[in-house]
Figure 1 (cartoon, protein in one colour):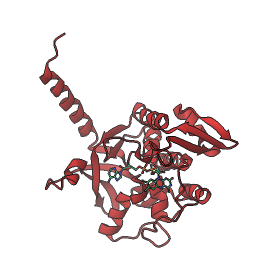
Figure 2 (cartoon, protein in one colour; figure 1 turned 45 degrees about the vertical axis):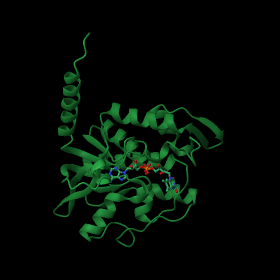
Figure 3 (cartoon, protein in one colour; figure 1 turned 135 degrees about the vertical axis):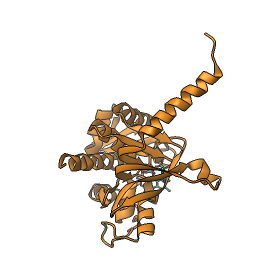
Figure 4 (cartoon, protein in one colour; figure 1 turned 90 degrees about the vertical axis):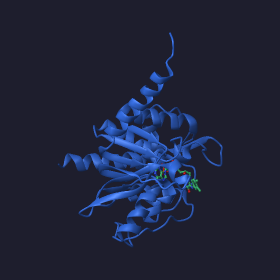
Length: 260
Ligand SMILES: Cc1cc2nc3c(=O)[nH]c(=O)nc-3n(C[C@H](O)[C@H](O)[C@H](O)COP(=O)(O)OP(=O)(O)OC[C@H]3O[C@@H](n4cnc5c(N)ncnc54)[C@H](O)[C@@H]3O)c2cc1C
């Protein structure tokens, strides 16, 4: 068979454009493709919501690839083991209640889980602002990460979404924008960003689930962002909390939908 270069180009442009157009109006927009965002996207799409995920880097997976200090193994506690089973991530018992998995396999399974459930993943796209209408977050303002890196003077585009999840990790980028630009109180003890506390795995892992939830109408936080926004401890390379937080935020939004 002869390969026509132009057909190849047309196929890529057509398919990508179709995907991007379908992402213009979604039920849930997840910002950040780390373990929390990917898990959330997987369960939301499984629950039947039109889910899109925007990741600024070339690769999704966030901080999971490197395990702890580039030792590419992750540790997961008992409570999160059902998620490993559900997503087909193989693991070994290290000692009672502690399981290890290969970080690369874990990321690969999370990505496949999200995509096969129907979530649309867009990499290389950065959320740089939010849309707000009548006191509720109604969407995101997006641009290519390369545009931001090159400091090019190029206007962004907007997408609408009924729910936005900030899963951008330590930087809590979307929530920071909301606090800075809207100057409105968010649902934390001080009404503003609390900032994350120093390392304490047990407390951090407990807090991350309590802190996962809606912090402003239409805006939810998950993963490391939840602790950064609400003042929880950081917890080192134990990833169960990230998976559980991603699942919990999906369940909260699905429960919200059921009320309608
Ligand atoms: C400096 C540092 C310290 C760490 N400390 C801890 C720790 O204390 N405890 C711990 O458990 N883990 C820590 N980690 C490891 C790891 O980041 C997290 O555990 C885990 O990956 C967090 O998962 P997450 O899904 O919440 O966020 P992440 O894995 O960080 O994923 C967030 C994703 O969001 C993307 N993103 C960010 N902003 C935007 C945007 N505006 N638009 C689109 N995408 C965006 C990022 O590129 C990234 O892929 C640390 C990592 C770093 C780099």
